Image 1 (tube, protein in one colour):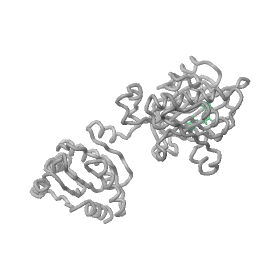
Image 2: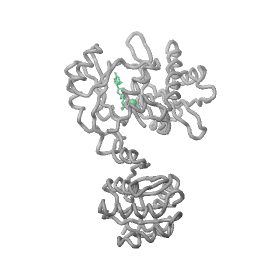
Image 3: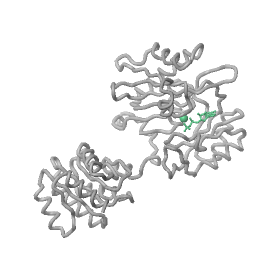
Image 4: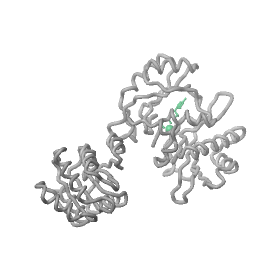
Length: 389
Ligand code: GDP
Ligand code: MN
């Protein structure tokens, strides 16, 4: 689960991490009054969407008067901001973050990610902040430093000093950097985050220099949300794929992809294998969908409806290896779905396992034209043949 920049900043503030004074705004009038309240003479108006690259796309504006704050807010709210991360349709801007503008001297990159290779949280930092870390990694990989954290002892002061020194922080900024890194690490651990990215971390101030977090992105482990109430409350469903939100409400595990073969499968492993088989045959899956163990006819109907909400879907591959499930339930569900949803696209069905004969009989006697498949490979080949022909 992702959160907005303003939520990340509010969260970090509770850990003592320095962030600019600011507040969230849902209207241009509110943005203006936030600016007035925080005072000063320059403000930054920032579009809150779950995507990076807002700066280059016009989603981060520096205003020099309250009236300018209001104008930028008015222009951003309700617009679709297109960044290199949103796709061509962009993301609808419904919230803004208004903060006091900072006098930036230099920008750095700071990130905490879980390195799946060594199974540890790894601190990544670079003197090349403000720009995308992927670009830095490609062009000047020597400017990225990494420090692996031992989970048993946590992030140690000397590790922070090593990283800070490597990116060029020194003097009185050194203890600030150590405190900041340790606080972000603690926040990440406490809240079950998978990733915390500060880009930019900046040296700010005209005469008195200090470190400040100017942008923050957090991603949390969905499987830990049950014990993270404050994080769960930050969820913004408007930023998520409506099909995925609906699916999770029905206890279905759905993830939208960009192909045209819809998939309804039981079990995450078999679902992944089905996507592989489709790809192997030269096709492209439209989604991942795991109907889970006890797939009632209602659940199968819901699965069909959600898959068909994607206008790209040209056929549906149903792949069931029934252990806890029963093929007759699946068959009944498919017939029910065909009736209630008036499905126009071909359904390729592969059934195996518990009550398979009964399931096949139900499908055969339904009078509906299902394309049956013997095994996974056969099902994938048939699905690909349909979308290609
Ligand atoms: P992103 O483009 O979505 O990553 O949004 P950022 O919050 O990183 O903003 C992009 C850039 O806006 C930053 O790298 C800063 O260089 C610039 N910027 C200029 N002045 C300010 C300021 O006072 N505060 C903040 N937050 N950003 C500023
Ligand atoms: Mn940024």
